[in-house]
Amino acid sequence: MATSSVPTAQELIAAFPETPSPHTGAPTYLSLKSLRDTLKANAASVETTLGGGAHGHLGAILPHATYNAIVPPTIAGTNSFIDPPFPGATPAIPANLTAHSASLRRDRWNANLKTWQLNKNINDALRKQILASVGEIYIRPLKHQHTGYSNIRARDMLEYLFNNYGIITAQDLQQNNNKFYEQFDASEPFETLVARIEDCIEFANDGNQPFSDTQVLNNAYNVIFNCGLYFDECKTWIQKAIADKTWANFKTHFLEAQRVQRLQRTAKQQGYFSHILNDQCTVIKDLLDEHSTAQNTALSTITNDQSKLSNVTNDIISSLEQLKQQMTFLESKLSGTNENHNPRSNRTNNTYRDNGNYCWTHGYRVGNKHTSETCKNPAAGHKKEATRANPMGGSERGKP
Image (tube, rainbow, N blue to C red; front, side, top):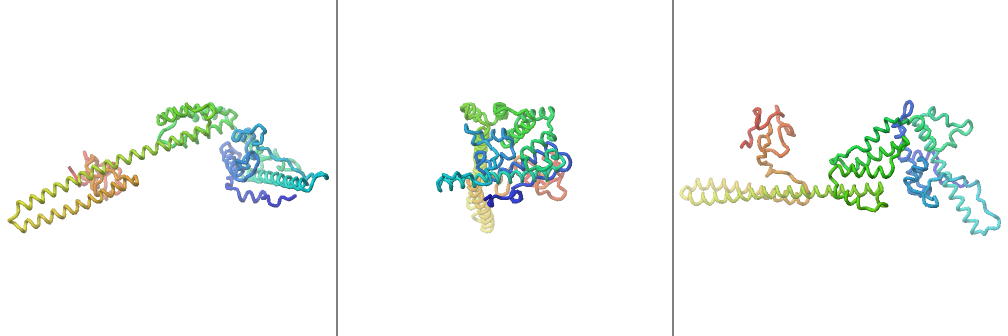
């Protein structure tokens, strides 16, 4: 049989992306679910044309009904994952065929043989991983006296384990229902809701009490609507055609809604902080005007005292230079905020406005979120309980 290009079970195991964790003692539902997730990832990683060709050998580990729910079969059933039969040791070629037709038959037989061999090796590899993780004692009843486990498919082995050790009680199913209908915190990412609902769907399926497609969509819609963040998107969803209302489309629709919400929040923050920096620039300009007036007054009124005039003038010029440097710095920060969305709240050249906060180490002029309790650079003896009302002997820097 010409199957030399087909990897062996051991080669497949070495190439699998995940290795199941060994479990000590009798299996539980959680340990079996973890094992199944690993086996699904491994089976799906090996490409095949079986089952529509979109999910690798995932159908080798999932029951047919579950796989068909993911990839609905066509009228001819070509998308169902059906284990290929053995095509025979040699190709069947009638004697009256032309050389071209005989060649086509041999090519088809060889392709079918490789598909059969790869599927067989996949099952062998997955069985080995199940035995290594769970231990043979818990699967021993499936072993044939003469053929061992060679005729047991990996999906059947998993089903046996779930039926005997992954027992789900009525109380478990009730808790799962409560989790399924639990409200959604709008401060969390939409992806957390998707993960929670899909975990509940899988648990209900394992407990033989599956949620219908209508239950899944209606519950997901109500949870999203009640969080109060996506009213417009909910209205758009309601207006969709019935055929378009699928779980996959629901996830896509509200993931996009979440992305738009984040863009809008970013734009609002950019405008807010740009406004703050503009206000700070206005303050600096007013200070420049005041110092300019003071300079003119000094020049006109102290004409007879050259020494005093020189000292005052030098002081004013120094102040003006410092203020100009602050102006240049804040204008560059304003430009950087508009381009990089990196606001720095209400600082002016590291000097804060009086916003009502107090820090035992840094005094009265601190950032909007800076208090004695939140100070990130406390001095020795720093008191987190200090407030404006009770500074506890702390810094008086910037005290009004």
